[in-house]
Length: 379
Image 1 (cartoon, one colour):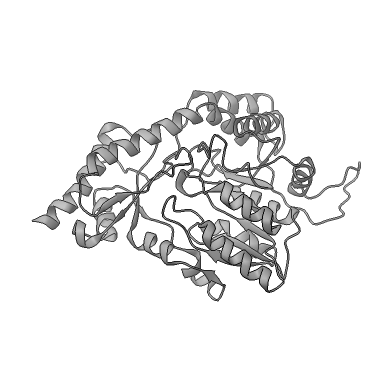
Image 2 (image 1 turned 90 degrees about the vertical axis):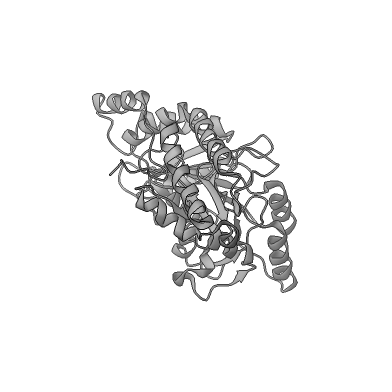
C-alpha cells in the first residue's frame, strides 16, 4: 500500500524546531512567555490589527469574542450555515440562539441578501440580532463591505470567523479585521498550525484586555487570587507559540504552495464534464487552503461519494464539503434562512488533498484516481 495522502497535513520547517528548543532551554513551558508575546505582536502586524490575543483554539477565541460582547440567553446570533460546528457551538455555550443563513455561489460564503432580509424582518418586529458571525470558508473571504454596511445600518456587531482564511485577502486587507473582532485557528489541518491554538484580533484595546483576562481565569490584578467574573483556561502555551512564530514566517510560501496545488488540479481535471472548482471571488485572494469542487453526477458519471470512496481505495483522504448546520441533528429546531445553496454545495461538493508539501507525484496520484472514475463511467 502506498503512503496515505492526507487532506491537509501540517508542514513544519526548521525555524519551528529552533524556537521550540529555545522555549525548552529557557524553561518557558508555561501558557505565557516571550514566544506568546512575540507571536501576538507579529500576528497582529501581519493581518493589520491593533491587538492580538493568542488562545488555545479558534473555538476559544470565538467563545470569548461573544462573551466580551455580552451575548447571553434571549439573544439571537446570525451565523453561516455552511461551516463547521465550532462556528456555532460557542453561541450555545453562552445560552444564546443561533439563526442560520445560506451561502451565495460567488464565494460559497454568507449571502448579504439573506442577511439583509433577516435584519429587516427583525427590525420590522422591533427586534435586533445580537451579533453577525460570517465564516470565511476554505481560504476565501466573504463579501465584507456588503456585510459591514448592513451591520452598521442595523446596529449589529460583526465577529468574523476567519479560522480557515488566514493569508487570504479582501480588497487588500485581511479577513478577520473588519468587524469588532476576528478569530483564527491553528489546528493541525490549517494553513499554518501550532498543533492546537487560535488567535483573536481586534482594534479595540478594551476588548483585547478583557479577552486576555477572561482567558487566564479572569484573575484580577491582585497579589492573591481574586476573581470578580467567571474565567477560562484558554491561553496558548509558550511552546506552541514558538511553533506559531516559525509557521507565520513562511505563511506566504504556504499560501503560494496551496494555490499551486489548486492550479495543478485545475489544469489536470478542468476538462472533465460535470466537475467545477470552487470559484475565486473578484474581491480578493483565495488561499486554496482546501481545493474544493462540485460534481454533477449525471454529467460526470459518478457521485461525489463514489469519487471519495475511489480515492480512499487508493489510500487518499478526501472529504465532503461541510454539512450545513441547519441539517445537523444537534441544531434541529433552530431557524434557518434560505439554505438551498448550502444544501446543494454539500450534496455535490468534495475537498481534495491540498497540503502545501504535496509533490507532483502526490498530485498525479489524486488526478489519476479522479480521472479513473470518469473513465469508468464513460466506458
